[in-house]
Image (cartoon, rainbow, N blue to C red; front, side, top):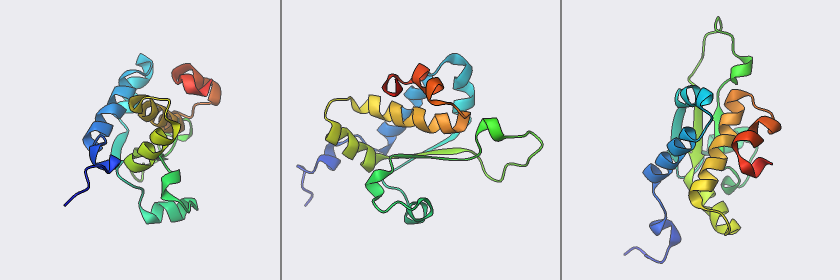
Length: 137
């Protein structure tokens, strides 16, 4: 029998996180929305062990999101793309940060993580990010 007092059992599921991340794209300035929608979005409960090992991260709860690709500022149309650009969001670490903070909405935190990962894709500076994400100011 499952313990229904476990907060993870009552937390939004992977699909809900996916929809929150898509809503974050809708909040971007119009000139960025199309390019952001071209990035593959994956939402998983936890990062894979090989990813943690590659990033030299000991605690999987420390990784809320990951951009896997080549930033647009470094791409050349003549270079073959070895794999599609992908953003990974990790539900359980995001939920843990949300609970630890206690002062932000979950959708706001998902948006923050999504914008941070999109910043890697777009090659944005901190000043660029601050125009989109109020937390970066």
